[in-house]
Length: 152
Image 1 (cartoon, helix red, strand yellow):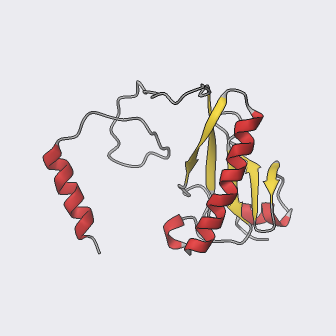
Image 2 (spheres, helix red, strand yellow):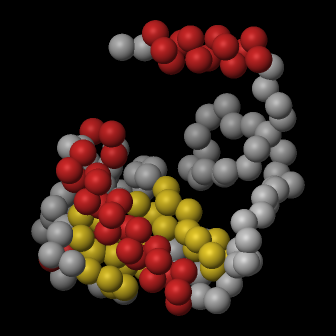
């Protein structure tokens, strides 16, 4: 049996709660959600989980499919105006996007939403937060930008 749980879901040998599918992709509910309707979107063909290492044709097609799934989630929930898309891939080494419905975000117009989280991450802790932290020093930002520009 294949060791990749996502490949097993594609093969039908592992249980899943599929919400949308086409010839090349499948979307299913996470069995470990941290909010209702967290959805995992994968290509049916196995690719490693780091999105920058796959051909653009694969990532572009996956993103296009995920956008359709996100719209379905938005429509299914009156309190969801959009979904967050996360390419992280440390749980399963099979390319995937996690869609997080942002419950409580519906409104007639866009508005800024601030977080009261006040934490800076020195290391990846197994989760991602999109909150802003304190205003960074421009000299520090200039050094970081230079480091990235000089990288091969």
